[in-house]
Image 1 (cartoon, helix red, strand yellow):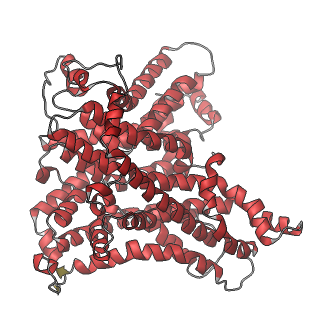
Image 2 (cartoon, one colour):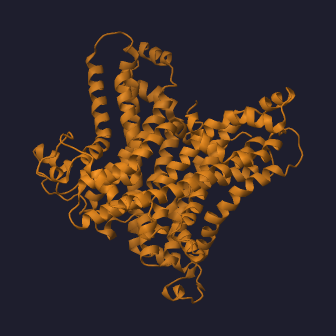
Image 3 (spheres, rainbow over the protein chains, first blue to last red):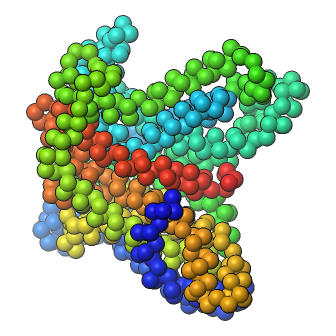
Length: 323
Length: 289
């Protein structure tokens, strides 16, 4: 791995001279240093520019009237929370929110359960099969989203897809069955794909947790007559609880933002209004209909939801931060 | 279910439970690998074979014709160029900025340090879907739509937070005492840094660089909004466009799968390098080592 360092470090070396000096000074000496602030400047500037300003603009716009006349230069008019009231009294919004949350919870639950089962399987089988499992999981994990979506759309193709062919060969008549036409079946396909993409991360993380449970503990429990189920629920589960919580939380947050997946499936021919989730709906409002006020209001809602969900995760990571 | 075999596994005896588990293991592995295999298999077969009544599960009679056709189509290479330009810009600046910030937060205590770390952690959780409309509007005002710079600026800001967090761990792993010892032995400060600390940080920089590469290379949402003109498309957008163009007559699945393979292969290779560190970075603290 170090071979490829060349190009990466070359870009960095000229500027590292400055931090090199204050670095040697140990944090023990309590002088107010200027150096760390200088070193944070580039990061803070880019974050303020590319995230901070849009956030501010979005917050402002969500409280303004922003229609077609504003597109043509008319100054926007401040309307307070009117956009939010309008947005959340629209049943379409609630349909989208409900769909997103349901999709997110179902997918996160299936992903975590399957991931834990596969991690247990990796732990139980011999070396050869474990390697096979790990390689297949890694390949699925590494696939770029759009490439993976394209393959899955081909697999589920109504006319020549392998899935229809296999199901028909198994005795069910799925000839020319269109999976994306009906919202429920659309979401079934989306779930299969998202779970396939997300399980590897869970399986690897939980497997890493499992390898830390000592064999002695498990053997002692077996000698004391604990059944496999008892051993799972009273030893394994409590031991992997921390990693399980983190992984579940990350899955919930990630499954709330399934934009690329849903968008590409919609491209493949699905009714938009009945399959929209938060991301795709914002896209249609903002880029499609140029209704920036509504799109901003809904974006702010998504951001608040994410921050609320991330709270526990961030607090957990903060404990790791020992200066 | 699994643990019973793990415990007695040391005894060399073939147990039926173990055979069943191995069978399940093989089936699961096949299920997960199949889409990837199917992409490669289809990319090698002519469309006539792919659209015949029963699928061909092995690429007998296959060729690289689909790949030649895709590249000869003339849109792949410009998209590759666009992706390379954006990715290189993102990786270089992201590493530079994040490295400085990581040094600051792991080697100094100062007022506002905790606030910065907290902000970084929250920012890395923010979804692109919650900001892309505003970013689109801003870039359009600045005249940066359809430009490498417009997208790169957003990517750098998006990737810097996690990179700072990842590098912070590596920098903290190299004790400052080591550098001091080198200085006692007669190195100057910069010598001590470049000879002692920097080589020890190299793996961390490579891992973070690959992480930034993967993020920028695969990104779809922001690119979709900012790069609307065909000639400025990155690879993921190009692939989407290729599928749509192919679908407008009858989809040539062989070429579409060849296109997907072209997009996926470099990513898979790079991903295998960083997988381990990525997992431990995301679930830091929940799993030791």
